[in-house]
Every structure is written in C-alpha cells, then in structure tokens.
Image (cartoon, rainbow over the protein chains, first blue to last red):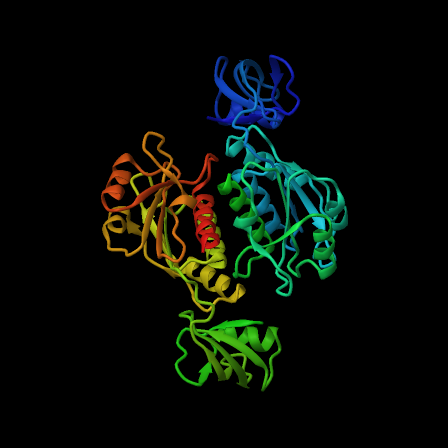
Length: 233
Length: 233
C-alpha cells in the first residue's frame, strides 16, 4: 500500500500536491485508473483512483472512505526539550510517529540547550513517517512552549514527568502508565529538569517517573517513554 | 565523568590509544595528575590519573577498580536482520547500547535485504555509545549469522521471535518477558520472517511475540524490544 497525504481533501475529487503528483506519476508511474490511498492526517483513510495522471496536479477520485482508521484507544502527548543537535530530536519525531503519538510539544526549560525551534523540517519528517508507516492520524507538532505553560495547562488523563534527580521519589514508568488513558509525558533537556520545575509539576498533578538506571539521552528517553506507552496499550 | 576505552588494560599502568590520548590531552587538556575513568568493556570501571600527558600515548595509573560496574540483572541478546540502509541499523546499535544490550547478532534470513555486514563501523559506534552512556560493559557485535544457526544454537533463557504473520498465534512482548531472565529476541527483515523460519523457531523453543499493531521498521521494532526488556527489569 502506498499512502499519499491530502490535508485539504473534502469531497470525492482531489488534486494531489505537486510533490505528491510527481511521486505518483513519475516515480510510481501511475496511469488513469491506478489505485492509491490517501489520508487527511485526521483519521480518514481514502481509497481512490487516478482520473488525470498529471505530474503537476494529479486528479484522483475517492472510491471509499475509512473513518477513524486504526484509531488507538489512547492519546499520547509528548513534551520534549529539543536537543542541541537537531538531528537527534528529528529522529525522535520520526520514530515516535512510527510507534504512535498524537501531540508533540517541544518544551523550553531552565536547562534547555535549544530555545528556538522552527517547525518546518519537523513537520516534513512527521508527514513522511506518517505515510511510510501507513497511519491515518498525523501527530500535531506544537510550537515551542515554556515548561511552566505545559505544567499548568489543563490535561485530562495521566500526567508524568521523567527526571533523574535522585533525591525525590520516582516510580517506574510501567507502574505509572494506565492502559486506555490519555497520557502526557514530559522529558527534560540533557541537564535535566530543575528541582523547581519538578516541584511545580508535582503541585499540578504530575507523577514523577524513572526510566530505569541507564543514562539515556533526551531523545532516547523520549522514545523509550513513547514505546512504553504504546506497549502498555 | 569522562570515560575512556582501555580494552587491553591488565595492570595499574596503562597507555591510552593514540585517539584516546589525543582526546585526553588535546581536547580535554588533561595534565599530570588529571583524573579520568577507564573501562575495559568487560564490566570493570577504573578510576585513574594521568602520569605522562602525551598526545601520542598518554600514560595513566589506576587508582581504584570497580568490578561488575552497574551490572544488569539480566543479559539480552538481540538477533536483528541488518537493514538495506545501513544508517538505520547503525542507529539501532547506538541506541541499544545506550539502553542496554549484551550481544548483537546481525542475522541473515530468507527475506534479508542485506547479506554482507562488515563490523568495523558498527564496533566503533558501539564503543562510542558505551563511553557516552558511561557503561563498563560493551556489547559484543557478532559476525552476520544465518538464521538457522541462531535458531538451533543453545541458549539458556527466554527465546522470543517477533513476527507479523497474522495467521499464527503471538503474545504481546510484555507478557512474554520474564524479569531477571537472560533473553534472546529475534527481529526479522522488512519482508518479515518466512513461515518456515517461524516454524523452525517454535520447534526450537522460541515463543512468537507481537510488538503491537503499528507497522514498525526493523530498527524500530528492534529498539522497541530492547526498551521493553530494559523496562521490564
């Protein structure tokens, strides 16, 4: 199955973007009547066929719609401090999309190594990983957000903050996750969350968790938490 | 803490390799009396001090030895089919080292996309990740091995094979893992294990497992299994 991204689709007829048209017609050599699948990234999967195989704007007609395609029984929001080396954070975006995540919030903390985050490249990586892993839900990449804002904004579900400060109590992530519940997990920068940030989190209903004894980099901790949530459900 | 790799250390005095010497003296500007840590990759952590700060062969003297440093209560052997795009497999080597793995066996299967695997780059990546994550045990990278050989060789512990063939029964990985037990997990190529390979595995005491419903790439499935084992222990 080959999945195409059709973010603005809203009727039986749709014209693929120039990039997607080129891919369909030039690379995959689709012709009139070729079958393909589209997603709007919001849970709808469409089976469609090519009407006009133009490499500049390939027109397709939807034959069948599958709403809520492979919808997960939980939602996962990952708040992660972007790494200094952006490749590592982008790798997390790709892998988390593949495994399963709904919202990714780059967070700015006291010890952050990166405070400016432009979303364009990340959004492209997420779109590519969504198509590659045949998902009809595309994760939302929010703008970079101060940690205090995400700690205090309302969230219905399980709220977890992973940190490495040995002085305060933490429970293993697998004991903190609840299957079927919406979950928000925060992963700090290489220098960890500060004691004040952890305190504010606890005061706002977060539980402190540990990801075991290995020294994990930010992006590894983030994917470990994503995988733990995925396998718990 | 800065960790140096000293594979042939066997006494109180040791001369760092040229690369490590350059790093210690030129990059970190260590001088006579500077403290550093070494590992032999086999579980020993050494605290040492610089005796002769030469960038070509920095001599150090061991002050204290910590055997079995942060030894895990289980061993994990990952048999993984190398990916066509080697970056993806090398990324797995790096991340698995960081999370925790003891032996990595590149496996050759009927549907393998890559049948030749040269270990030099992989070994370098593993050594770098071991030092970066401050581990005293360095994972062993075995030569590429035919799947039949790993299916039939003796292994005391839990033996798992992850596959996506819907016709046969599979249990979720978290239900198959047993904490504290040595574990061997096999991850197949993009085209999956064949029915014959799965059958041979079952006949040899392997349990078939699933990593959930997402379509995971080989290297993502491999890191998911590594993380699941790590978090189970």
